[in-house]
Structures are given as C-alpha cells and as structure tokens.
Image: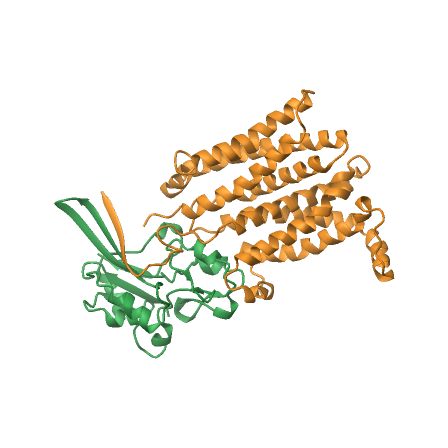
Length: 177
Length: 313
C-alpha cells in the first residue's frame, strides 16, 4: 500500500476550498493551514502562463523530517503517511528546517503539526477532506501499489511532475499538467 | 519574468515569507558547546601528553568554566523547545540518523564528565575548598585515580561534540546552505580555536600563552582552508547550492560574513598572533577576544543565512 495524491494543475482554479475544508476537518488553529494555494505566473503580458497548485506535505518516501526527528515523533504510518505523534514531539523545529517544502509549522500548543492525508478519514474508506470537497474534481487520492486505482491510472496516462525531486525526498504528491 | 503568489492559507508568520524558526538560542548554544568541546579537548590532550606542569591552565583552570558553559548552553536549548514539558523524550530514543538525538546523548555523557573534571581541580583556584562530607572526599580520591581514562574520554567526546555542533546543520537538506558536511569539521576547528583562546585569556604563564597562541594560529589556518573548500564545494555543485553560496558572495550576508567572521574573527587574530610571536608590542588579549567574537559570529551568521536559503519550487 502506498498512498499518494495527484492534482490536475489544468483543472485547478485556485478557489482555496481545499484549504478551508482542511482547516475545518482538522480543527487547524486560526491563522495556520496545512495546505495552501500557489499561483505561479510566468511571462510578460500578453504572453503569460499560469500554473495553479494546491500544495501540502508530500508524504515523501525518504522524508528528511522523519530522519532528523530526534525523538521519533515524526514517523511513517501504514501506506507511507508521514505523521507526528504529539506527545513525543519536543518542538525542537528540526523537522521544520529539514523540509524543503516548508510543509510544517508549530501548533500554538507547542508541537509540530502538518497534513496527515486525513488518515482518520482514509482508514474509514473516505477521501481526504481537500479531495472530497474540490469543486472542479481536480484532486485524486489513492493507492499507488494498486494498478487499477484511479490515481495509478491517472499517473500512467497523464504527464506529471513532483516538487523538488532533486532534494532526494521521493515526494508522493503529483502534479498533472 | 516569474511571479509566485501564495494566495491562501499560509498566514503562518513562522514560515512566510521566509522560514525562520531558530533565533539566538541555537547559535548561542552551538558556540558554547563548541567552546566547551575545545577546552575539554585541550585539557584531556595536555594531561595525556603529561604536560600539565608546563600548561596548568589548560588542564586545571580553563576546564572549571566548562560545566557553566554546558549548563548555560543546555538551558538555551531548553528555551528554544516549543513543547518543553516533553524534552525528556530525547532520552527515550536513540536515532543515529538524527544528529540532534546522538548529540543529546553525547551531552548526557560530556556534561557529568566536565563536572567531575572541574571538581577534581577546583582546589587549584579555591585552595580552601572543602568537600565537607566524607563521602565526597572519598569520591574525589577514588575518581582521581582514573584521570587518564577520563582524559581519553574527554578527547574523544570533545571531538564528537565539536563535530556535532556543525553536523546538526548539515543534516537538514531543506536548507541548501547548511547541507554541506564540511560544517562538521569547520565548527569543530572553530570550537577548538575558541578553546585555545580561552586558555590564552586565563593563563598567567607567558610560555603557555605563547604555546596556545601558536596552536590557535594553526587552527585558524585550517579554518580558512575549510572555508575556501566550503565555497569550492558549493560553487561546483547544483544551482541550488550555488544560489546558497551567493548569500555570502554578493548576497545579503556578504558583508557580515567576510567582515565579522573572516577578517575580524580569523585574519586579524592570526596577524596579531604572528606579530606577538615576533615580539612586537601587541596587547595579548586582543587576538583571543577576536577569535571568540569570530566564533560567535560564524554560528549566528550560518544559522540565520541557512534559514534564508531555500530550494526553488
């Protein structure tokens, strides 16, 4: 089992529903967020290109955050989900500076918090809140090890990329383009 | 032309626009830890070379401040933690891949050792010191038989501690400027240089001062070579690391790095030490004070500049 997410940058309109859904579902404190929208505009008017990405923790196979955590609070769960155990976290920020994606933040209560791929929903057979709520249905979530899953077929049939693969992290959030 | 907008959500002041989670605590601790490692290294080494009669400060006097340095450093580390009540979790885990984990364990070994070494020599500075309890007096006698073993442990652990202060940064591949293993030896040598400077400052013997000024000169030369190598490594590497090196080669940290670390912290003290060796009239305190200043600046500048350096998305 290897969970992964794919986001179709051609369909994403940057509405931020995924961000709000995550904040609501996971009770993220006000002012913080586990996912975010990035709009990258290149070119000079009138020759412009716009890419919109819904970004979050990449749940990397080779996670620098898990490696650098001194207490084992950052760890892999079943399906490769990277999570933080609250009462093992000392708030040293090693994982925050080790993450090339800046996907982590310190929760006001002191421990480090981040996207969990909504594993509490996934365990019950549901999709993560961001995927479930997307109005353009541009997000896909599933098991990479299953060749018939929607995400496997999407990645087989569409061009895709990951973010900063050269950091050696083997990210598991894909962007279709 | 590229415009990158993060349009929603990340109103996290710790992450945007620049991630800066580590403030003064970590670089201060790295300086104190490196300094402690340097002093302990020379204490152990001088004892093992049986030179304590010639160089009493390095064996008996300078190590007295090491417990203070370590306790203060550990206190700073504790202040930096955001989930403080769980700090003991460091000692329920051993993770060799995480420098912070084995660093915590090394400190667990070095700190008591530094207390014992200081206790065995406290009468050098306070001749009237009395342990009051028989148990403590007997412990002192018993422990003083094992000083050679302790000296070996101090030399080895001091090197590990010194390297750890640099490797702590190297292990984070999220910050390209830190992601070079040369920081390990660089911080080790810088810590040793600081240790030699403290010995020079505390010593009352001209001979000992001269000896450690010479040692310091050698360490400064090694440091300069390591800094050159660091830039060679960056500039021959990927665009990300070239960009990281640009922070010091024209970017926003250029002036502080070259002025405070390289010129004031390395080149000037080296020149002063050379002039003193040729018996020019130079106040002997200037060089070691500059070395210590350079050591602090090196750690602060690397800590802050590293947090600015980013991978390009």
